[in-house]
Image (cartoon, rainbow, N blue to C red; front, side, top):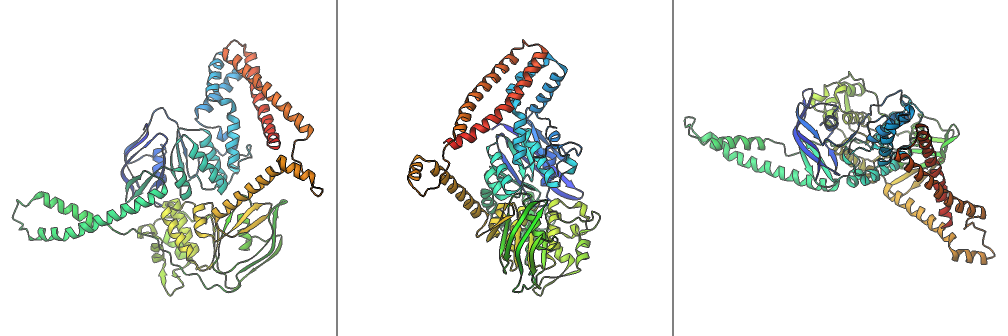
Length: 628
């Protein structure tokens, strides 16, 4: 396998905290590798070092000389003054460089440069590059190309950053949480795109379906060291469990052996200098192994919500629109104790608006909302909360409550509660500015749960949380006795928790589906397949005869009209002629015999032909589907 990346003996500290030490690994061509670690152990820092944005204390990073590298940061660094289209074209991509050089040569009438650049444009298929750009932007729901970056939300900036990296088509992709701020449809598109791509990939993501379907190698940072697993996420889980069991068995064996060796060390007289040095050295090695922990420090949630009465939340004929755009249309529902509802739908379709209506942060245009007297909301918002960077972690908790009542007779101090959420003594007295993104999310989750809610509303809780924390949070939510309303693009998370789905289908329609996300998706696909078969059945000759012979049959359009037939035949001829003209122009351009004026004129004509062909081919496909 051709080596694309070698990481040799990297070590890094953040202040006094050791993130990783002397880690080494390699990535070969076409490998798709995921990096897994707990929050605060240096995942993003390692990616930054590999991408050349940060430097290690020791070690080095070696890329193959002839490859291009694209890097997506958690918060992409974009020029706020650029428009979206300007930003995505602002790249070191070889294709973009050739396009820019070609445009400059046309502007300067540089005939010699154009002779070389035209062949390069052909080799890189650069004539259609703008269409490729627009296709990727469209898939990521970016359609306002002239909007300036400074006016975009954080989620929109992340999608522009992702589009910019994908459009540059690098040989080696480094992606830090690429699925954050993507809805389910976009995530599934990206999943398919990366699976089919020839690019070599190194990424950090919490999306376990994504990991399972895209990656063929997992690298884990644990206890400052590194472990590699040649397989997908499911394989990693199995082999990691085996590794931990083997490690614990080795530690137990060392502890048993240590008792014997300690007795030997005590018995030997101090004066005997010929004591076997190898055995003394071995004693200290055994002692080091025996002193390791055999249990993993885990976040264990057992927070009891307050009692929930019979009447919880009742919605009657709720409607809400913004600027004539309907987000919720005539929706009614009565919540019952213990149900867990997943909310799915595209970005901007009204999910967060719905949550704000439920929590009375936003009033509906019409309809009524009745909230039971015993309901205590715990609302974890996608935007999170802004912590004061100069506050200590423990002060944030103490400002809410000095003592936390877990609702089961157990009382905890603020410090104990933080330790419960895996914040060490040192971290508790650290400033917020020193926390990683995932640790901030965990702190925010703590502040929501410490109020003992009995109706939890979680809007994208999985963003920036590590997989270990997600697994524990899932187990807690499964046993949660109150109501749970969950918005998440993490399909694994939703599948594991939701017993039914509120599917936002557009135009204000909210469908209550009995099942999890995967079951809803499969049902949708089956429904679409049924409709497709029905349409095809209407077009079949047998159906046409049957319906024409039936006096009660309603007239159904199953064939092209005379005018459409004429258009269809005309399009075939026009597309053939346009392609012939395009081929002829490309041949003339590559021969190098044209004057500067002719060269510019024919180049512009090729651009026009591409646009005309795209439009006519799309119309031909539409008519072709009807005629089949």
